[in-house]
Structure formats: C-alpha cells, structure tokens
Image 1 (cartoon, rainbow, N blue to C red):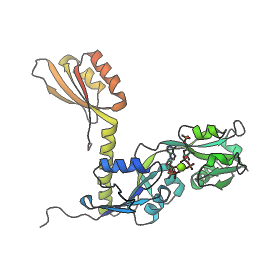
Image 2 (cartoon, rainbow, N blue to C red):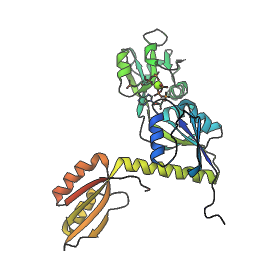
Image 3 (cartoon, rainbow, N blue to C red):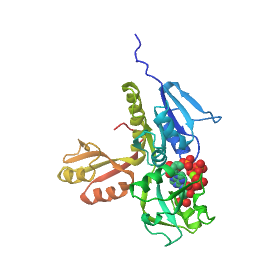
Image 4 (cartoon, rainbow, N blue to C red):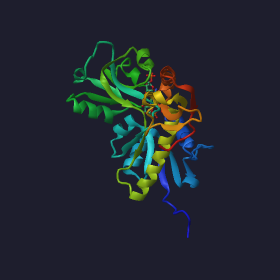
Length: 291
Ligand SMILES: Nc1ncnc2c1ncn2[C@@H]1O[C@H](COP(=O)(O)OP(=O)(O)OP(=O)(O)O)[C@@H](O)[C@H]1O
Ligand SMILES: O=P(O)(O)OC[C@H]1O[C@H](OP(=O)(O)OP(=O)(O)O)[C@H](O)[C@@H]1O
Ligand SMILES: [Mg+2]
C-alpha cells in the first residue's frame, strides 16, 4: 500500500511580466515551490509538490482562474476586480501595493460627481465602470493600455483613473488626485469559487505555505529573561500569536520568555521590555513558519 496518497496536480497561474512577476516568483520559491524559469518557459511542472505552474499575463490571470481550468493564481486586487470573472481573493500577499485614484489638472475636477459627462482614461474600465455606477455618475471611459497619465495633455481625456504608488507619474504629467481612493491594491492569491473539496484542500495547503513565508518576513522571534515579579507586565508587551512561551530559568525568581513580534515593532518592544526590567533581550529572524 502506498504510504502517501497521491493528490491531484494543482494548476496555478503566476504573473510572467510586470511588477508582480519577480516578487511572486520569490514568494513561491521561499514557500518551497519550483518556479524558476531558465528559458522563459510558459509552464513548469513542480512534481515534488504536485503543482503545475502556468506563467501568464497578470491581466489575464483572473480570467483563467474565474472561467477557465486553473485552480488558483497570483494577480493584483485591482486586476481581479477589473476582470470581474467570479475568481475570489483568498489571501493578501503584501507586495505591489498601490492605490487606484482619479486625477485631473489641479483644481479642474474636485469630486467624483464632477466626472459626469467627462472623458476618463484608464486601463481598468471594469473597475472604474463599477465604481462610477455605484456612485451614480455617467462618464465616458477611454480605454488605454498604459501611460494613461499622458492622455489629458494629449487631449483625449479630461481625467484619468490609474494606479498610483509614489505619485511621480501624475506629478510629471501635471495632474493631481481628487476624490477618495477608488481602491487599495496589492498582490493577492485568488482561487476558483467552485473547487472540488480535494483541490480546495490542496490550495489551502499552498495558502498556508505562503502565509508561513509572509509571517517569517513580517515577524521576528523575541527571547528575553525577566524577574517573575514583572512576568505579567512583560508578557503583555509580547502577546504573540497564541501567547508567549514561558519557562523557568535555573536562577531562582527569573523566567525566560519567547514570543513573536511584528518586525517593524521589534525595536520599540525591546525598549519597553528593558524599561519594565527584562534583560538578555534577543531578536532573531524566522526562516519559515506554519502558524
Ligand atoms: N508603480 C507601481 N507600484 C506598485 N504596483 C504597481 C505599479 N504599477 C503597477 N502595479 C501593480 O501591478 C499590477 C499590474 O500589473 P501590470 O502587468 O500592469 O504591471 P506593470 O508593473 O504595470 O507592468 P507593465 O510593464 O506591463 O506595465 C497591478 O496590480 C498594479 O496595481
Ligand atoms: O505613482 P508612481 O510611483 O509613479 O507609479 C504609478 C505608475 O506606475 C505604473 O506605470 P508603469 O510604469 O507600469 O507604466 P504603464 O502605465 O504603461 O503600465 C502605473 O500604471 C502608473 O503609471
Ligand atoms: Mg504598468
């Protein structure tokens, strides 16, 4: 009898170009998958993990996952909503972060309502159309492939709706944002809503691995010693995921504590622990995790 039951091969889409491509490959590799393309292959079989990866244009991935035969994929939240295919976001991945904004010549337009009857250039007509419909505004969408910011200057639009990260592209084109952000986007893991229980369990496993890498990137391990008298106070500073691990030191009246803290809070937490009386405070990086 086989020791391990062989699972169905999962079919997962990975961005082949653009700003999502490299970090997605790095994330999957850190999670133990074989995704490196030596010769720009369109498909890679990772037989050890029973996954077949398909390298596709980020803009097409929600379509393949929502209406095709792929089980899951990585794309941008903005692209997922724009495609509106029924594919569902199942995990935010924390890179390729951006906002999606309206912009026009400074002070020309100031609210979404001002867009009524105007021309709005965008590469995301689905996303912008849904937003305008929700706000009861009728505008004419001008669909462009990219370099959207130039469209106002060149006379084909009165406003743009586009990805903004640093704002440099808008500033360079003499445009200023207006209205509330339409969306906050980042890379996301998406999946088909109608997966069989077996495939769904397989994608859950992929997701747990990715979460493990994200936790390892975003958290650090903290270890310290403290007098038993201040243990509760110290533990309150490092609640961790479940709760801190506490073990007695050989020295009477002292405890050793281990917990996880967000990487960007580590230095502050170390100061706070020192001030309540903790000593031998050590911070170390995590390689991976399954929380
Ligand atoms: N400057 C940026 N900063 C952060 N995220 C961005 C930026 N530009 C695009 N994105 C994100 O990348 C995804 C778009 O994928 P796309 O293939 O258009 O990437 P791209 O980096 O714009 O590549 P391309 O060179 O094809 O324009 C979207 O989720 C979008 O929000
Ligand atoms: O706020 P910023 O830091 O300037 O970044 C936002 C810009 O980056 C992307 O453009 P990209 O270089 O991908 O060109 P594209 O418009 O042709 O896709 C995006 O479409 C914006 O134009
Ligand atoms: Mg682009």
